[in-house]
Amino acid sequence: MPIPTDLRRKPASGKIHVSSGAGVDIAWADGHSSHYDFVYLRDHCPCATCNDEREKKESLADASPAFQSSALPMFKPKPRAQSAQAVGQYAIQISFSDGHATGIYSYDLLRTICPCSECAALRR
Ligand SMILES: [Zn+2]
Ligand SMILES: [Zn+2]
Image 1 (tube, rainbow, N blue to C red):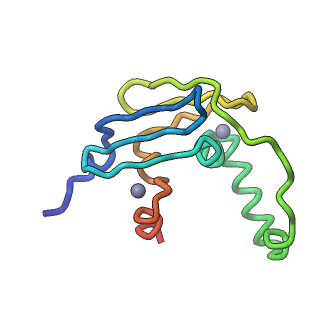
Image 2 (cartoon, helix red, strand yellow):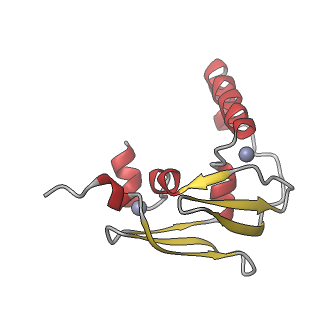
């Protein structure tokens, strides 16, 4: 029997390790568990500003394929989480050390971007 979508998107339990900087752990209602680094979450920030930035980067990479492979990543300090809080039943909000705090990570999004190899394979 197929697993209903809502179970896959529903956290059974979650932990946000702000002080240790270890990231976010979520155990889902369907038995899957996910771990997210804060750096990963910062890169996947769903707010409009970051969406724009990601789109710009992608179009830059399209226009000049060498851009992505040859350009060294600019050094910037790894973002850390300064604080995090639950937003109702459906999302978490994270304030990052670079001052960015507008990203609200819904559990729906978090399950979609789960970085484990199993989910990465499903996204292909
Ligand atoms: Zn953002
Ligand atoms: Zn996964």
